[in-house]
Each structure stands twice: as structure tokens, then as C-alpha cells.
Image (cartoon, rainbow, N blue to C red; front, side, top):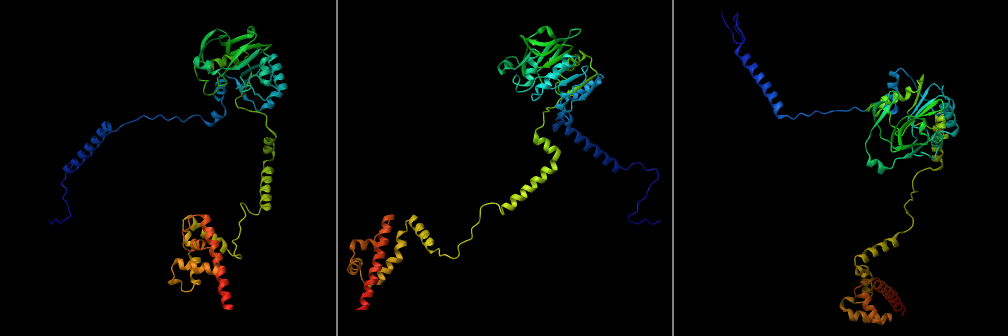
Length: 401
């Protein structure tokens, strides 16, 4: 039998090869070393990520309260708008507000007072900003309730947010998480059915009004999504509503107000408003052909030599090159005197003085002196112009003779 290269002989009954065992051991050693290094040399940190509240919970701040009441078999409806107060529901229902609308007309608050007196139950926070100077403030005053802003100095002295109270009807002790912005005074405490009080100041109270009830809180956020789960806040809400055993609960947890004329126009005629805006832009474009300042064309007709000369003179004067300004004119004066190269300064000045009848000191200053001031430059220029004019006139007269 002939065995060629590249062939192998398989022996029947042979076990795992030594090479396979070595590779397996190396892989296990590498894995063990990796686990040991990761455990002893790598730093591990636990990171807690909070996803926050949903968009629905942010838009509806009493969403958790609504679902809590629905779990207690209450029928909960959202108040659609301020028109709701002109046609109130049955007196067997509960109206649950985050705060009293400050821009509600007085007539609507009168209807609300009559509704409570006939057996309705209103649960609300205090209206913001204008606590007393508003129709909402007058509404509370008519029921013996006055709300005032809590001074920040007093808030700093007593920063505790956990308040104890007894919940009726069995006087169950409860702890309420309350962070008030106001404090409430009550003129007739005989009508009080439950409340949180400290030093004759109330921060939560429920009073009997005719056949109905009025429940108000100095903390507008007492029952919102962020507070309803704190301590016994949810229990307080259920006990306050149980007072009248309502058929339905009407909730308003958004800051709704009467719509202005521009808002109503936009909601009803938004396309017309946009078309008018486009038309206005088109009319402005036609009225003004272009935007920005008008451009001027460069002057290519008139001569700018005088401007160039003024600019050049100004440059030389600022750099103390006054002699350079006068150099060409001085050389021209000297060329007008014959044999000027053979004459010294004094002879040149004497000849010019003889022909022009000018003072020799003035001539010497204009031809040879250094010019350092503006007045000196002007005087030298005038003298040189006078010398040129008189020398030209003197030569003309000599040619005539």
C-alpha cells in the first residue's frame, strides 16, 4: 500500500487528540483570567434612570386623583370650559377644582353659591395672585373665608410640610403632606366640619353651606399627581368627597380662562388670517421694491483730482512729510532762475527778491525752511504761488521787450 503526502491514517477507536485538549484548556484559562480581571480591576456603577411623567400626566395634573376616584367607583368627568359654570350640574354632584378661576364673572360665582346652598359640594384651591381683589375673593368672603399670602419669613420659621389631623367620621388620625402658599381665616367656626389648623390659621377646611359643602385648601397642589401619593393625601380626598356621596365628580385641573377675540378669530378663521398675512407681505413687497439702504453708482464723469490731492496732502501732513508736499513747487521755482545750479541759497533768494519784490526772509522760508505746522505749510504754499506768478509775469515782460 502506498501512502501519499496530504493523506492521514485514521485509526479506529482513537480518542480526543492532545491538540484539542490543549486548545480547550487555553480557552478556559483565558476566560477565567478575563472574569478575574473584570471582577478585581474594573469599576462597576449602578445608574438609576428616571423616565419622568408622561405627557398626559403633565397636561392633566389631577390624572392620578381621577383614576383613584374611578377605582372607588365614582363617575369622573372633565369640566370642558368656563361655560360649564353658566349651566351647573345636579346638586348631588361634586365639582373638584385645582383653584378658583380668577376671571370668572361675578354672576357665575352667584350661581355657584346658589348651587352649593342647594346641596352641591365644591372642592377647590385658592385662586392665584389676586386672592382678595377678584370675584373669586368675593365668593370666598361671602362664605366667611379669607385667604392671605403666607409671609416667607413665617414659612422659613416653620418649614415642616407634614400636618396631623383627625379625619371624620371616626376621627381617624392622619398625616397630610401640605406645602401651603396661603393661610385661611374663618369667621364662623361653627360651620367647620374638618380642617387643619394652627394658631387660628387654617390650611385645609370644609364648611357647611346651607344644604351643601365648601372644601378649600391653602395648597393648590395638594391633590395633584405629585402630591396625591404622599402620606394620607389620597385618604383625605376620599373622605372629603364622601361627605355628600356624589353620583358624579367634575374635575378641572388646567388653567382655563375665557378666550379673547383674537384667539376666537384664529380658531374659527385661521386660514383667512394666514391668507391676509400673505397678502400683507405681498403688498409690502410691491410698495418697497428692495430692502436696505439705496446704493449709489460711482461718479465716473466728474474729476476727483482735487479729492485725491486733498487726501494725499492730508496723508503727508499727518506723517510730517510737509517738505515732500512742497518739493515739486520749490524745484519749479528754482528752474525758473537761470543758472540756478551755480548759485547758493543767498544768491537765489536775492535774485527772486529782485524780480518779485518780496521779502527775502519770506522767500527763504518758502524755498528752504522746514515746515512743521499747518500754518507754516499754508504760508509757504502761498509764498510759492506768489513767486511763480510774479516770475512768470517777469519773464513775459522781458520777452515783450
